[in-house]
Length: 61
Image (cartoon, rainbow, N blue to C red; front, side, top):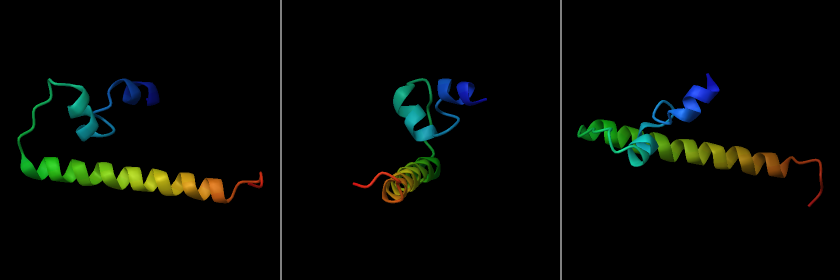
């Protein structure tokens, strides 16, 4: 399942999939806004998780 989602990035994030694949056409403004907001939210969540993992690391910095 993970391999198929990695091969087809539009399953995970349609905005990034649209940037990579030119065959995907979507002119619906609501779809574009929602996927853009979803992309920003995912990047913020991943950044926060990475920062928390670094802060709670066993190895002292």
